[in-house]
Length: 77
Image (tube, rainbow, N blue to C red; front, side, top):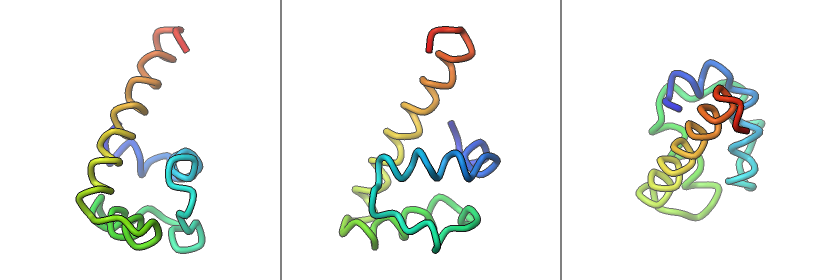
């Protein structure tokens, strides 16, 4: 999954992001941030993490989301 796919289905992505980042403030993010950097800053602030830590977690999360989507497209999930 990339940033475009994430923003195209923001409400669904936000729910899955909350599972990974439980302190995410939905009220602060009614719409996707302009960039991944904006989301990174929000998550770093709300989870007491550095921007680098959040970026690594988001990269991993996006990769897993991509795998899950591919598996469902092939009827594996």
